[in-house]
Image 1: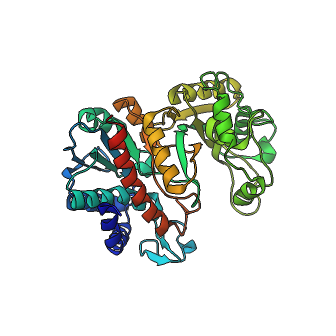
Image 2 (image 1 turned 135 degrees about the horizontal axis):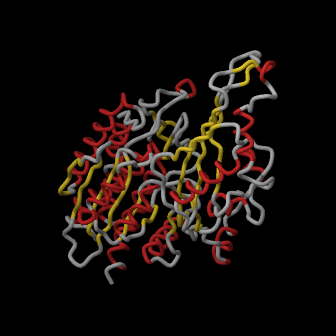
Image 3 (image 1 turned 90 degrees about the vertical axis):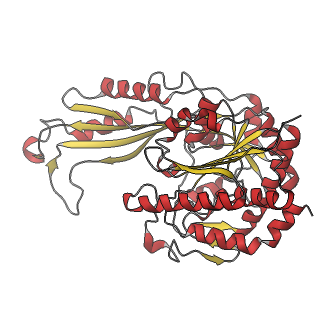
Length: 459
């Protein structure tokens, strides 16, 4: 056994206990009452990087929650790898659905149960302790390493774009490894080739300037809820295809090779429906479920409200109605352009007898896609193959990870998602957990990958 593997095995209990200590910090980035806890988590990460042997470690301001940076740059002639992760976490509501207090981690049946266990503290900690193991046993690393861990991923990384743009020289690298993500299941690896982007909007419809008696004014004054429903309904045809003019113009079509790769990923319709609680599959014609979820854009109504919503009946014609919309975008779509197209559509179809206001949501995220032929991706695939004894699925994520596109935009490098959480580990939900088997497997994987990147990217 290689020395770094032996070190990890000998310190296994220590590293589990340290992870439990890290998880106990309630670093919820979305809640102002936890701002100091996010700072506390940054301090913990800073101190742990230092004790691992990482140099130049510092907490850096962003204008919001901080980031932690560190590096080790003594591998002459070797590539520079930037490792990314986040130490902020989601809120814990609803608290009554947790079996145990979310910040009092317990180990049960080979799993650590606590908020942040898998997303992303367990995965973030893995490359830190692997780096320590190599430095303590070999006094060197096979590559140059930089670390960037942020405290605002769970709120969309609002300040990270400006931070990366302002620190391009500090963060310059040959490849990014993201410790935020996961594998397909316990026995099957996967490589994430793409993540969808995001655009969001708010629609406000004003009818009369106050709620009216629906008997006196019903049928004579436009009802803003009716007007809003018509607007929303106009955005899709009955098959679910988006009908906003220009919405699909920039969508990069799937190649035959990509569709073949997606086809290798098994899909169990009954299991899928059981997971969702839905009665049937629905979506844009001409595409299967994975193609719709990973490589096709969407317009979704996330919330709609207005008028009387209490128990019983109150016969009013409401004054206002509101909707929140988000769009998941795919390669080559621009969030700002899509938001403008939807805004134009809303004003075009709105009834003339109501006032409509469309407001763009803050930020937005650019879609991200890495070529299958990318050298770093192929090296990561070889490590996963050797570790699992199987070829990794080549997949995309339906969700959004803004930082992947930001690294490509500002540093001109691709990000390889290299993490070991699994989809059933209740990320963002009560009873979140992280498998100890994944924790240990991830350590072995990072050691293998860093060594292989040092061998193959420098040749």
